[in-house]
Length: 315
Image (cartoon, rainbow, N blue to C red; front, top):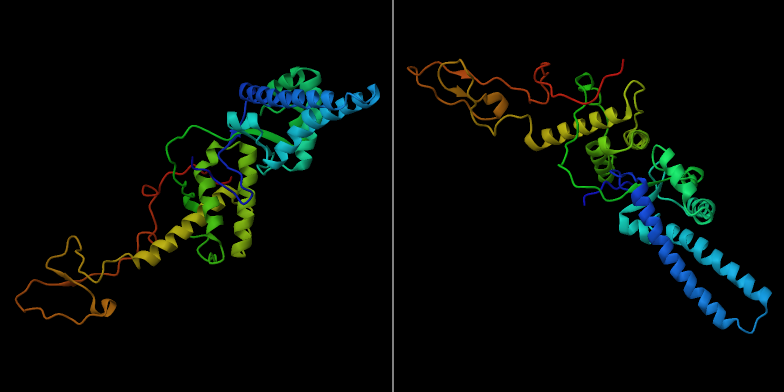
């Protein structure tokens, strides 16, 4: 599956997971954890037969905390939010801003999960997930995390939306030479998938990408331009510059170009093309010089020619 990967290795097209998939992932994780706990308990019983009751109780409590609490915390920390159950269900735990979780996030989730999942048999977690708009349980709220769907159904490929016409040429003076290809890729993929993101997460990502792009170009993001619109305008400016480098000024390769409504053949301008003037017989039809036609990207577009855009100019 094609994924939008940021500098923090987080796919951008992910969506919040709902209760059924999360419950199935938790059940799979608990089944694995209890199987490991039973195996450890049997080993402790066989290995501590010579100890007294107090030592065996202490070892039992330690094994419970180590396997059922410390195990999931370690797995989520090392796998960046992908436990065995979440991996099977295509889920992942991320931060509210879309970044990968760290040890403190997994620790808070695991500590609160002892109460809302183990001690209450998941009742508190289910109620909290149903009440939350993004399906978060109490552990996610306290840890500042979110469980998202990592695998989504493949849809038709979308293109980068064009910026609004009132931004045409506004960023033509930006220096784009210092922008790395990885940042261009992240910006382009964000623009193609921004309608699939959660609005709050998408806005935060647009602000970070716009700040990174502004830092590379040495110009700040205008206050009257939303971050996503700024990204689309700069991407279009880069495409225009690449088209000019690839195709020159948009004219043919020194060949004659017909001008509608003019009699006789049209010869290339010897001054602009660098060729010498051709001999024309006196009885030939009148000739005209081909005017210098500016490239299509540099000509002003009429309102009918301008493509529709999903961006709305600020009031």
